[in-house]
Length: 476
Image (cartoon, rainbow, N blue to C red; front, side):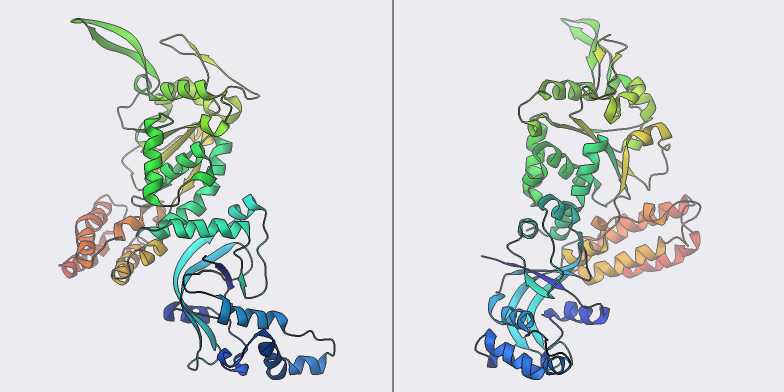
């Protein structure tokens, strides 16, 4: 059975960077007692620590305790950490973790290092995790001491283990990050009823919307952490009509989205009848299931891609007020209206959730007005460098070089006007490739044309044009 170890890195950045770069873990101290292979058990390690390290403490304080915790930690490194175990690393107190590793070899005494003598072979990768929500769900405390601890027994740790083990494909870092982050987003969606995931192209908004939708329908604990399994479950829920997907465009209107009069041919004769749109259909489905015995099975999700490409106020019409959480059916300030075509009395059920996605780099469409913004929670998804770093070891060096180059061009000093540079920076998916030739093609035919378009539109300084041209030549 695999175990999970919690490691707290030293505040000295260079020391941990050395571990990351050379693939090992060290508890930093107690090199004075020498190689642990010379000690038969934990008691002998304790005696060696008392004699070689803790003698000064005993001299100044007669009540000094024996170094049992330190001995236990060293013994665990030597005898209890096993190949295949996982390690998560935090830099200080709290719930934020900066690295995850897998144990690839046993204990060794590192003669090359001045301080980091006691070591275990660990293959690291950098991450940006915040497990606060996971711990809140399981009500477990993360121990502050010692520096290295087996945390497999904790419920929150078991959940983290599931996340690590479930991320088996080449996009594992992104899968784990999305799993951790989306718990916060699911909570926001539950309270607000509708959210918008906004960000530049390639930041994973569409995939994240699918993951959140599955979490709303099935419950967060049932969401697969493997990307393929998650998308399979998403498609199944679409087939069951519990999730619906639509894309907004400039010609989208109320009649298409809510309801309208449409021509129908019956036996060669054209007649007109009231037809409901995707929003009204989803509301009716959700209303049928609202009184279900299992509340998880009664949740429905409507995903609206490119939500800012339509005139949302025009598309929603009088229904905009009904979207508010407290004005949904069954809520304290419930509001109903009569639909203009069918004349039916209508309200939005509280078990229907709306997820919109919005490309912040798209300046060709109008902005979302304040009335809409008050009714949606906006969550920004940014380009994530660590996803690029951890995607493919054979291409990560060149991929990071490309990522950093593009990010430098899309900095605040190069962006013209009041546009935020983060809104323009292309997402990490542009830099994910299984080979360097594939990555070169993506840079030359996807990223560089986008840079040129930004420059032509006057939102990126034109004086970097020559640098971009030189880079294109280097790409071949």
